[in-house]
Image (cartoon, rainbow, N blue to C red; front, top):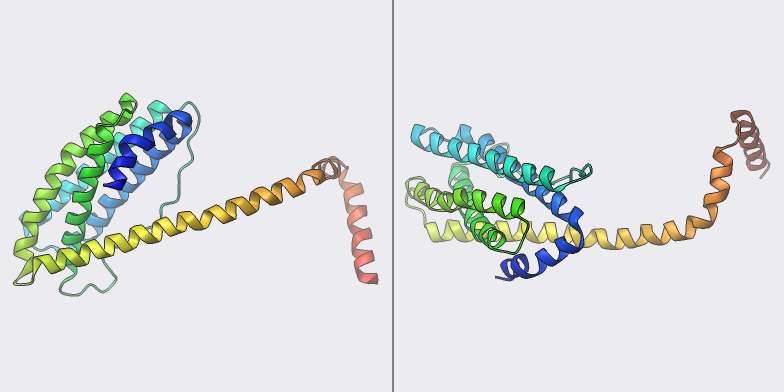
Length: 234
């Protein structure tokens, strides 16, 4: 509820004050959607039933389509090159998946789709620019169906296991990964502050550094030899 309130009330204000954040956010959403499709694509080898494989592959195509929607919004909004962020990836399926790997994957996908569906709905109805609202509305139309489709897929793969327990485990895992992502963001704040302080402290050296760079190579080599000689004398 807090995330959706922020999406409707706070995010539009932040993006209005800093338009570059709009384009950067669209690019990041596109990368996340594409990675989501790649995660499911990597797990298709675990699915033997043709209908389930086809359904999951259709979801992969739609995730890639969502990535194109957000990337298109990014390009429509940007007037300058937009940096591509590095998104850390936590593989949903390990190298040696066990018997329950497929069920855990589909449960995680279902939990994620349910959360994304509500988030996209909040963004689609927020007072945002037309390219952004359009991208979220079109992507949300697919995500809404993914929630029901993934839920129906869970039952045949459960094989007598408690679905409520499987879903609880998936929600816990998703919450833990969201916490780690948030902590990584928090950890960057002190580093950014430290770099800002170092930049201010180094400002007086700017003129001397520029003069040093403008010296002829022969003079720079001469100064370097003198510094080495003084260091050796010590």
